[in-house]
Length: 221
Image 1 (cartoon, rainbow, N blue to C red):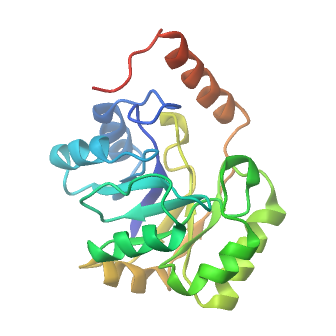
Image 2: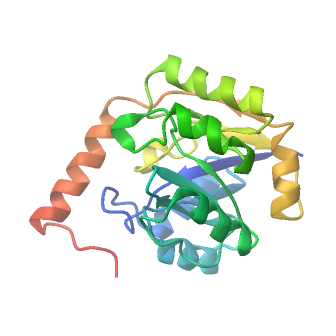
């Protein structure tokens, strides 16, 4: 049996998403996802709560903001504080037994780390996000995949979902694993299932953030 994974998604614990935890869990099961990594912006509280609700489904993660750009952190128990140097953030993830890699690394509009940093820090990454459904630039996704291949780092394919409709639209499919390290090994043989999200996905994030700013929607407790 292969596992269908969503390795990058957001909930209402991110400022640009309105997705509630019970709704995410219910929808993930409905569409056949076996694991979902909740990677809210510089926050793990929602992921920890969701893990308590569905430990068989949820991977606790974070999209941490470093000084060089955003870093996807998986299988963590403690939040990675924002604005750390990238190398220190990576060290903190590994110190707690987690794994990490850059999200949309070549997208300057959304805090990608950039090509120079991608190449420089590739030996420290456990994976590289080589397809992001919201990055509608095939060349940038392809370039990230090329760097990952040349560096010998596994690639992952994600939806970067901020809405339920996006969840699982792109997937990474792997064999079962028994530890974060075995997870990385399984990624080396992963099947990537890419599909771009609609243009409305980004609009939905902006509207969610706008609603929060105006106080129409309360922040997560």
